[in-house]
Length: 212
Ligand code: ATP
Image (cartoon, rainbow, N blue to C red; front, side):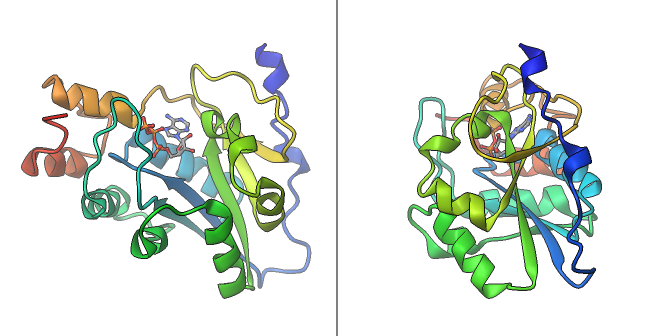
């Protein structure tokens, strides 16, 4: 089964031949509830391997409601991202969807960015769980024209068998999820080394995730 995932086709990746003037921007969208080391490592790996000029961490306005998800104010999530990415000149927080509010679809957001930044190429970074979900994304056929999807493997996920073009990037497998971190906080277990120390301190100070 592992073999089937093999299209780790970095060798097929050719930087835009039209010259260096085009900016290469990676986007990692997510709920970041909270941001963790898995997010940071995947962004760093993709940023380095694809020689990106920037990686935007883009929190969703409305975390999808699912069992075990504690909805916390988006301002907390933005601030935790800021703490998590500080000192990395490549990383930026992109609060566009938070400012728009409500439910945002990636295709609408990316249409906006492509129009606003015509000199940039966009690389949308996803874990393999999101990759396996792509067929459910709104107007996915248009979205794949707007961005290059970049996939990062995630433990416990089925190999990607979908039909959409994804550039798979090698990265150490990180068995971390925000769900597990919320649960650990709730159970009063340590999250040290799973999130940046400033994020852990922020969670403690604001007593996030203590009550479901
Ligand atoms: P939750 O457990 O609340 O669903 P999460 O840990 O999956 O959260 P998100 O903010 O939803 O984190 O994820 C944002 C993006 O990062 C998604 O594309 C997801 O697949 C990817 N991602 C998150 N954690 C990892 C990981 N450990 N390895 C690879 N990809 C990851």
